Every structure is written in structure tokens, then in C-alpha cells.
Image 1 (cartoon, helix red, strand yellow):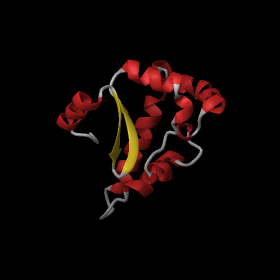
Image 2 (cartoon, rainbow, N blue to C red; image 1 turned 135 degrees about the vertical axis):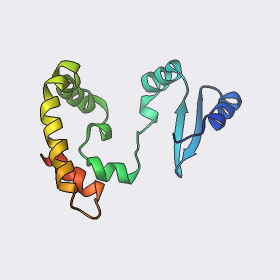
Image 3 (cartoon, rainbow, N blue to C red; image 1 turned 120 degrees about the vertical axis):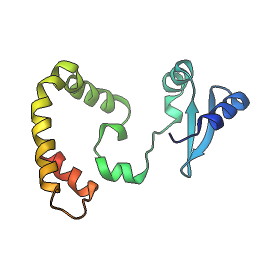
Image 4 (cartoon, rainbow, N blue to C red; image 1 turned 90 degrees about the horizontal axis):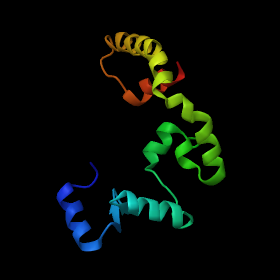
Amino acid sequence: MLLDLEVFDLLMCRYGEIFKTRILGYPCVMLASPEAARFVLVTHAHMFKPTYPRSKEKLIGPSALFFHQGDYHSHIRKLVQSSFYPETIRKLIPDIEHIALSSLQSWANMPIVSTYQEMKKVYIC
């Protein structure tokens, strides 16, 4: 977890359900309840821009759904949402298992495995 639970509880007591803090050197807003999230994301969404650490942006690419907002985000989310239904995922399990096992076998003879580079290869499959 990014924020120790004791620290989180202390901040909650002091600042309430919505408060500003810094995580990994980046300013952020913490939301501690569904009501707080709804308040911020529905009534004040224009005041916030979601940001992610550069390493995450580099790993998943600048075109990822995470990095878009507004109508474009909603449109793309609707297009890809069906890919995450349990029935859809269930059909993909044999292919995912095959890719995972192939990758593990190819790593067996490697002295060092760069997970970043190898995950990029798996993603391309």
C-alpha cells in the first residue's frame, strides 16, 4: 500500500473524507469513502487531472485509457468494457495459459530476466 493504514487513519481523523497529501513526491487528493469519490468525481471533476508515475505511463503507453478524460474516455471505455466481462475472460484463459507457460519455459535458461522487457514481449503476443 502507498499509505500506511495508521497514517491514513490519522489523516482521516484530522482532515475528513477528502484531503490533500503527497505520495511518492506527487501531490494527490485522497478520497476515503464512496460518497467522497462521487462528490469529487461528479461535481468537481473539472478541477482534477488524473496523473500517474512516469514509470506507469512508460509501461502502459500514453494512449492508455487511464490517461484520457471526458467524452473520449467514456467512448473508449464503452468499446473495451465488454472485454472484461467474466464470460469473455473465461474464453481467453487457454490462450493466456499457453502464452504464460511458453514465456516461463523461455526464461528457464536466462541468468537474469528483465521483467519489463519480457512483459513487453508477452503483450505483443
